[in-house]
Amino acid sequence: MVPQDYGFFIDPQRCIGCYSCVGACAECGTHRGRSMIHLDEMDRYNSTQTVPTVCMHCEDPICAQVCPSDAIKRSEDGVVHAAQKPRCIGCQNCELSCPFGIPIVFPGLEQMLKCDLCYDRTSIGHKPMCATVCPSQALLFVRKDEVANLRKNKPLRDFLIGTVHVETKNALMVPDPGTPLHLDAALLIHGGF
Amino acid sequence: MSLIGELDLEPRPLIRAALATLALIGAVALGSRGGRWLDPALLGYLLATLFACFGVAYRYFAWIERPATRMYFTHTVRLLFSSRVFRAAPRMALLALDQIFLQRFIEKRSLRRWGAHALLAWGCMLGFAVTLPLVFGWVRFTSEGLNPDRYQAWVLGFPAGAFPLDSFQAFLSFHILNVAAVMVIAGCVLSLIRRKQDEGDSATQRFDLDLLPLVLLIAVSMTGLMLTASEQWLQGRNFATLAFLHELTVILLLLGLPFGKLFHVVQRPAQLGVTLYKAEGEAEGRLACKGCGSPFIRANQRRDLGALWKELDLDGARHGGGVHHLDLCPRCKRRLVAKAQGVRLHGAFDPFATIPVHAEPISDSISLTS
Picture 1 (tube, rainbow over the protein chains, first blue to last red):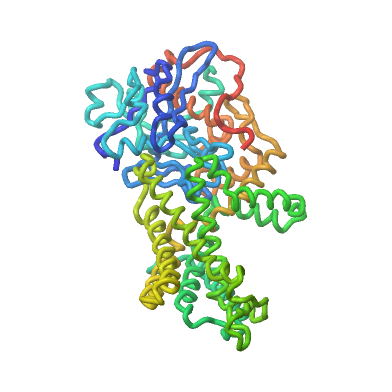
Picture 2: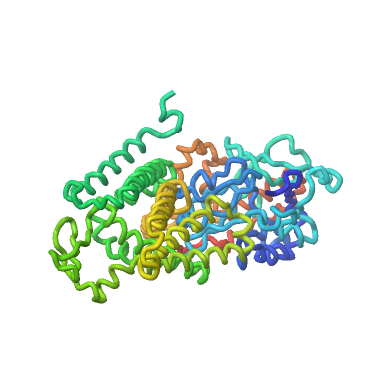
């Protein structure tokens, strides 16, 4: 069980694009050899900015709701696990429906894999691989009460897509977490990619 | 409150499961010639099998009523009852061979996992293929007339060949379950070793879901082998006790079938339907992401997911300009989160805001071939 007084805090603006997290993630025992973290370049030609994305571990995961084989389970500690191997039929519903673009279905394996908060480590009190190696602490796994001392920004766990609320276990760091973070595609289409 | 209400059972799957069980009872009655060929020693197994049939059928019918499951189930049923089935049949046969019988997708996950699973799965299939017809009274063996040296096989009450007791055919008939038992034990032991050594499996496994079925399968196989050992080498010593223990373990396994991990055996064929669904989607073409313009989602899956999201009360996930969240590729969804954070952090001084450029090709790991 992952300690409930610990939290995962993501701050993409601190990312320096070193790819340490990508290498470390592949060492995780639950998906050994395959990196489940996404490190995207925002605009490869005009900016050095990179964005690390791990699973946000939704309270009511849409990936699980759209899974036809009921293979995606959320454990009591709030971790949404990769699809159960005996059940997953590789349909990609989860991959296409995740609000944050996290799961990956590997062709041929018929198996969805995703970040599971390095359950083999966090369940015994260690940090996830990515947070262990992140030099700029864009990925931070610390006690929840420590974050206020470490960051000016505050954790936000509430996202809004249109009228759909998505609450998560992992947090994104913002200055004013009072209102949900509105994910509007207009930002992508008109905002300058 | 009624019993159904207390157990929180859904009425429609309940009725369908009852009908499926009645159909099996009818098939048993017919195949055993009105019960005449039923072996009284196997009645306990028969009752447990009927319960397992009801439980598995209930869970199956409840499962296909889930909106997401119904999406694929309906598509596959439509395919099976249309003229397209003739074109799809050869591919379905090949897929069944590859995915259900050979299970090559497990080989791609790990050769070790495949080896253990193949032994386990084929051992179980062989075991059930032999025992179920015996339990249902569809197959039976007797002495040929008054000749104690020859065995007569009966299928559905009809004679189906006789063979001498010292023939290879007799040896195979008497020991095929032992072969199945050895395969199952080997598969289970390999699985247990892998589970012990694999850090990921060790962290996420549960005793009731992951280990208990393996322990039960070993118990069933061991007690079965011990029956042979008692009969062959111990002059039948403790045979009755061993028979009772074997029956007990088999009944426990059958009773647990609808609730545990072994239910995936019934779910796995859905993979065939999904593969055909994907192939049809590929033929129809992929739609472009409304963020970056790269093709990513199959047209049929976009349609069906749209309907599914509506049914799940997620249809409000629409952005300005009529863009549905499903119209964004995974990569754009990820960049959108960072973009939204950037706006919240810095407003006009958003570090992520750059000069618009032409959409670059998607480098996401989402497959264009899977």
